[in-house]
Length: 338
Image (cartoon, rainbow, N blue to C red; front, side, top):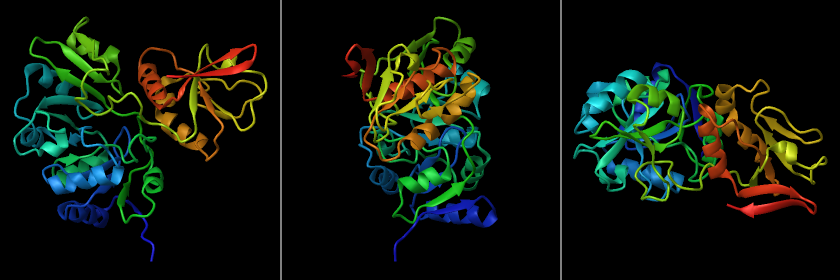
């Protein structure tokens, strides 16, 4: 008999089943306010290895540990600096991940052998209920490595169709892009390691202008989401230089468009936000990519969002998902690899 994932709404029985699975060293699909996670006991190295195996994730790419509160945080990190405390007071529970010195009890497999651990406190009530009932959980996004992040329980089930994975269904994720990852520095500065649902403007307002430094992805991987290619559909995806208005009047056979605000005339596709709402666009970006990733080999043509606020995180995801750039020439659309 074929095994299938099991999606359950949260109630006392589902919570007890999830806690039992985690206690037995198994993985559980878990909603957060950003994307769905593939969770396992953060202190059980064998359980964490199952995350890597299920996702087919390379061991050099570290995981985020999720905690319910400051008591659980103390189990995971060895030191919380004054700047880290200010960030926690401002943004937790919520989509900000901090890179902090780890406790020896956190297995090296969680941090890819690095001395710091990425940790956050999620704002989703289902994640909070499981964390309070079980304890800290390692949980990257619940998708095959490099593919589109899931924002519903059905997305998770589609990623792992021939497993008996238990997935807690908390509805569609409210933010839709992953957490922002930062590293508080001893001099009061802040390294920005991954763009996400907490904007650079909000971080600058918290730590002060000029204290935020975006880390080049060419440097050594120190946190999740720093790889140059990620979040990708199986179809080729090209970012159109100049926006979708630069596309030809007639769509090539099978091609689709991913518009920020307005689809070009004559083009099928998905519009992220007809009103230009960056919050709505961020919430829908991964679901839109999944809708367009319909098995065709024809390209998806996308455009960037405005480069401010959540638009920066949207554009980061689009660029990492992209095959390359496209622009219109007298000979038609020309494709350039990134």
